[in-house]
Length: 140
Image 1: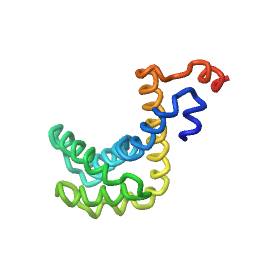
Image 2: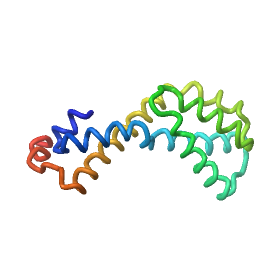
Image 3: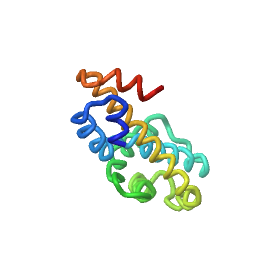
């Protein structure tokens, strides 16, 4: 990924900082998956979550998703521990998600990777460390 971003036109120092940091802290795919899973499970169990409850759960998941960095499949563990902590949705519901979690793990990883790539381009452009000539060559 780092080599591809350099070929795309981002400066090496920017890529060297943004991509590794993104793998630790920019977990968009994981946060989206966890939030959607909680909403799905609430619907399965016919639990009406108020907007305040939904926003609270999403806020908690944004923080707890950071514990999923770097470990494949850890998003599922984070989800189960979060459900146990908030005590609104039965933890047993995660068994429903177990069958599709491996496929969703791939989708989470792709979303995280795209987010990291976009972050590298945005930072490189804001720091004037983006080579337009390399970019044009890369997209041809």
